[in-house]
Picture 1 (cartoon, helix red, strand yellow):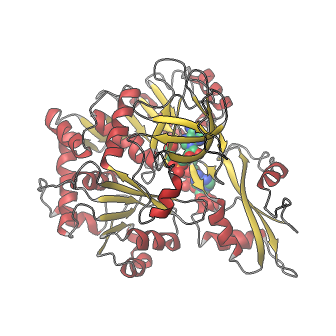
Picture 2 (spheres, rainbow, N blue to C red):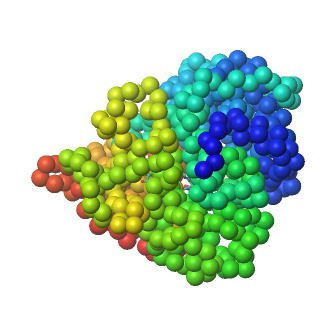
Picture 3 (cartoon, rainbow, N blue to C red):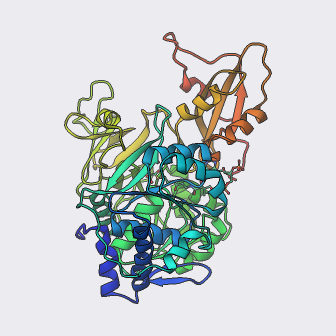
Length: 514
Ligand code: MLC
Ligand code: AMP
C-alpha cells in the first residue's frame, strides 16, 4: 500500500520528483504542472497568511468551480488551515448558519454575493471576506499576485489536526460540521490510489462539485496522492463528458451522471476505449444502469460506498468480480459490520440485514462543537453508526439495501426531510407536512412533499415552492408539493412515510430521464 503521507507531502514530493508532470488541465487549454501547483498554491497560502490565517483557522469557501478554487483548497491543506466548503446552491439563509457555526477567519465567496453575505459574515465574526469568481476575478487574486510563492508553511499540529469541516444535514434538521483530520484524508487517498491502481500516467475526468467529499477528497486527493492528473470540467454535462473521454483514463460520477451518459447516442465502446476505470458512488447505482453501461461500452462500473463522515468505506475490486447491486468489500484497513438495529448486537452470520457500522482511520473526528451528537453516533466500542441498512454476503461484499435514517438522496445530494418539513411548517397557512423520496428517472429519488393546509386556507403548490426557494438550496426544494386533507399515521400517531412512498411511487414515472 502507498504510505499515507501527510497531504502537504503530496504536493511537495510530486513537485520535487516530477516538476514537469501534469497536475491539472482544463478544456480551455490551461495547464498546471506539479511545480506550478506548488508555487501557485504557495502564493494562495501566503495570501491567507497575510490575512492572519494560522493552522487550525477555518477558511469558509462558497465559490464556483475553477482552477483557483482547487488552488485555494490545496493551499489550505498545505498550511494547516481548515477548509470549509459550502455548496454553491446554498441560500444566504443557509450560509449565515454555516458562518456562525464554523466561525471562519476568512470567507471566500462569489463576487456577486459580497453585498448579500457581508452582513452575515460580520455578524459571525469573520475577519476578512474575499471574493473569487469562476474566471479567477475578485479580491483574493489581487492578494495572491502580491504574495510570495515559497512561504514558510506550517501544516498544523500533527496527523490528527483538522483538515476540513464538511457540513452535512441530519435527521434533526440542523446541519452539522463533520470534522475530518489530515490522517482521515491521507489514509483514504492512499487506500483509494492503491485499490483503483492510480499511477502518474492517469488522467481523471473531474466533473463533480468541489464542495463534497466525492469531488474533493475521493477525486482530487487520490490524484494528488498518486501524482496523476485532472481534466477539470466546470460541471457535469453528459455531452461534454463524452467528448472528453478520449483524453482521460478514469471517470468518477454519481448514478445520475451514468443515467445521463446512457442517453447520449454516442456512448459506446469506441467513445470510452481509452478509459480504464468508471467509478460510481454517493447514491445507489441501479442494477439496470450497471448492465446497460456494460452492454453499451464494455466497461463494468466499479461501485463504491462512502459518507461525509467516513470518506470511502468499501469498493468493488479493481481485479476480481464487480457485483452489480453491491458496493464491494471494505477497503484495506477499514472494517464494516452489520448490527441488529434494535439491540445493537453484531450479526455474526452472512447475509443478515441490519445497520452498517464502520471503524478505521477514515472515520471522522466528530461533529464540530457538538460532542453530544458525536457521542450519539458512535457505539461504546468506537464504531461509527452509518444509519444505512445493509448486509454482507458470504464473499464479504457489502450490499447497501436501504436507510435507517430518514434521508432522500437526489442526484447524489443528501436531503434530510426534517429540514424541509421545518421550513414548510413555518410557512403561513401550513398545518403540517411530510417530506419523502420516490423514484425519479433523472435524480434517482425525487424530493416530494405532502402538505395539510390550515382549516379554511387555500394554498397553492407553486406558491409553496416559490417560498421555499428563498430559504433552501434548490435541490432540497420538493419537485412536487401535494395538498392533502391529512397525513397517514399509525396507531402511535407517527407519520407513515412508507405509505406515502408507496402511494406516490409512480409520481415521476411519466418523466423522461431529463
Ligand atoms: C440540480 N438540481 C437538482 C439537483 N442538481 N435537483 C435535485 N437534485 C439534484 N441533485 C436542480 C437545480 O436546482 C435546478 O433546478 C435544476 O436542477 C438544474 O440545475 P443544474 O445546476 O443545471 O443541474 P445539473 O447541472 O443538471 O445538476 C445535476 C447533477 C448535480 C446531478 C449534475 O446535482 C451533481 O453534480 N450532483 C453530484 C452531487 C455530488 O457530488 N454528491 C456527492 C456527495 S458526497 P431549478 O428549480 O432551478 O430549475 C457523498 C459521499 C459519497 O455522497 O459516497 O460520495
Ligand atoms: P453524504 O452524507 O452526502 O456523505 O452521503 C452519504 C450517504 O450516501 C451514505 O450514508 C449512503 O446512504 C449513501 N451512499 C453513498 N454511496 C452509496 C452507494 N454506492 N450506494 C448506496 N448508497 C450510497
